[in-house]
Image (cartoon, rainbow, N blue to C red; front, side, top):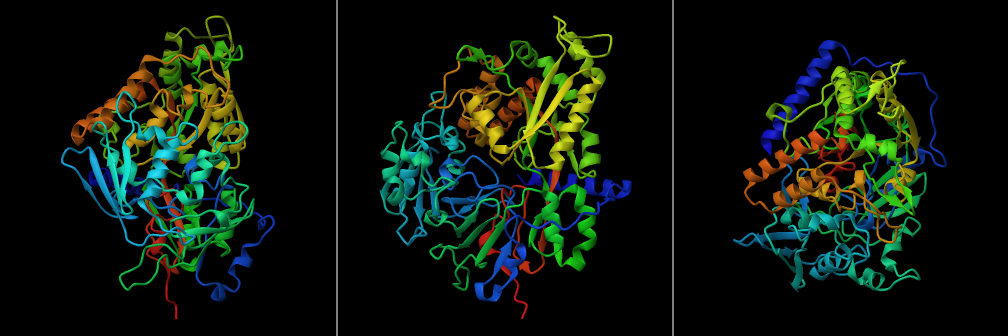
Length: 609
């Protein structure tokens, strides 16, 4: 682990040094009028702070999609590090596991059993006792319930048969986890799972609506009163106004105390205005309306010059832990007698040479220089650079450096040719043209789509770009399955098995060849390629291998196969940065963070008296 993180930091230092030498940090900022937030002013959050206690103001980029943590599938969200905590927490600086709701754990010599011991006196945010039964209820009745669409279920499947661990509660403070077979990610997967309150949700799991669905599936929806949501993390949601703000207040029953016995978290109130524009967030931060803002490469130089005068510091978290990519819809099935994808386009997308040619046809270095001011690197692997299982190009990972000539050769070898105007056509004379969609609201995304369009146009492929709302994008992926090519980003982590629901052919997020979800119209004629099956088998094998060096070899084989087949065509890996006011201390920012600061419970306002 430490070796990979050190590699990331060395790469970061090299990148920043190169950027400084090349003078790429100069940024031209257009003159724009001050933009006020619709329906509210950040200034109102700055008034009477002494009466309200300490607070932090940090923008939230989107409206929450749900207040039900078990049903959440988005990042950022209102749960992680704020409203829910697992048996363990992951230190985002080191990647190591640390005690959370569990004060200790013991792993049996056979590696098949873990005993967690909860802390004494744990309570939910409504004051009710939090016990081991809450955890067994969460896993057995919610996560393993096929009638509830939980994304985390696939990550608990063990072996080729997809068996699940046995979770029991011998007493109120003891949780016993028994795996039917060796399962290397058992501790991390179980330990980081969110816990839900049985005393409030048990009936919602067993009772159904008129359609036969558990009432749980509509419990704590986005239309619910957020003050009724019961949590166990450092904060509870005290207010939500769509399009305006989410406000968090300290959970009075949170367990954590510092060495002096003071209750944590230290900050009384976290205010998260909903600002869907990075430009607006930058303006609000520079004018003092925000305490924290994400720093993009395009505004790094500007903010760096203002650090001292603006009383803030730019924290650098290292290479981004997520991945951005385009992917084609490879599903060859039909629904209600109609193909999901036009058969002509589907035949293109399902040729390995076509996908490889597209990968070679994208100029990532220009993307990095033009959009990220040089603060990034080309991205190739589906495994986060912070992971000990990451395979670097230096270690032999296949890469797709920009090579339009190689792209054209691959296309011609796959049966394509060029007409008199230089447009790519297939064997039947059909012009190669498809629609690339992504979510709207980000100038960076729009610029990336524009360059992909230009780059692929240079090799004769016509790309029509379309930006739609994120909710519409999710509907296309999860429901209608009606899309050709998507640009998207996923978060990453140190444990590759957390992506098993994406890479397993029957995984709920296997979006490039998706199965219909429960209750949806069936898909007839879906085909699963041999390489998809092989990747699924590698994931199963790696999860069952307890020897860490052998696990690395298996995940290396997976990465090579994923790059060879290129179901995902990766873009760039920017540097993660955030600016935070100097009046806050104990801030620990890392690229593995999902939302704000992973150690929010120990961040405090400096004593300025």
